[in-house]
Image (tube, rainbow, N blue to C red; front, side, top):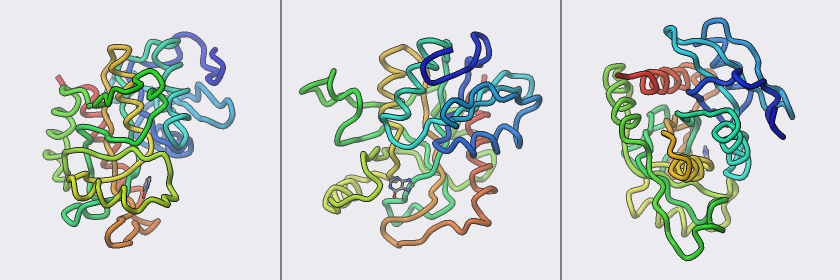
Length: 235
Ligand code: HPA
């Protein structure tokens, strides 16, 4: 047990998928894993461990925003030995070529700040995905025929952003989408020598104002979960 995770030693698999929403962790575990058991419910942050095609997997919520993700990812890495951590979540599209329902595989994650800014100080560290996971996720997405974009994303500190100019600069510099967690996941993976990736479904669009209708969400999010699982266990 850690401060925020009630799982026993050995309850957490080496491969962890991390949706922001704990109820999406429950849905994904019930939908995609065999023999899934709940291993954490401290503060309602649900985690489940089961198997996918015979491979042990944990699906554990991260909460919203980098400070929350940092708590869970730190404990999963340092106390439970997680080796491969894949964020599965939603993002807002930031390019005309990116459509609602498309998948984004995040090569890099730009930010204004992260919980690691304090240790990086004047350094602008470039958080980037693990290449083997990135390559395998793109191959899995192509095999499924899911419209997929690969490139940089923006991990914002705020959902209700009062600085429209920052989003404009991100769009201008080719950033594909905005979410709130990946940059710190990539920082932590780099620090601890683990593999990390973010696979995201575009749920809304900053340029068009379009949003994914609720009845479409499960199918679109399902593609993303399968891509993440295929990537985790490729090769
Ligand atoms: N901003 C930040 N995070 C998000 C968004 C957004 O527009 N959409 C989904 N996650």
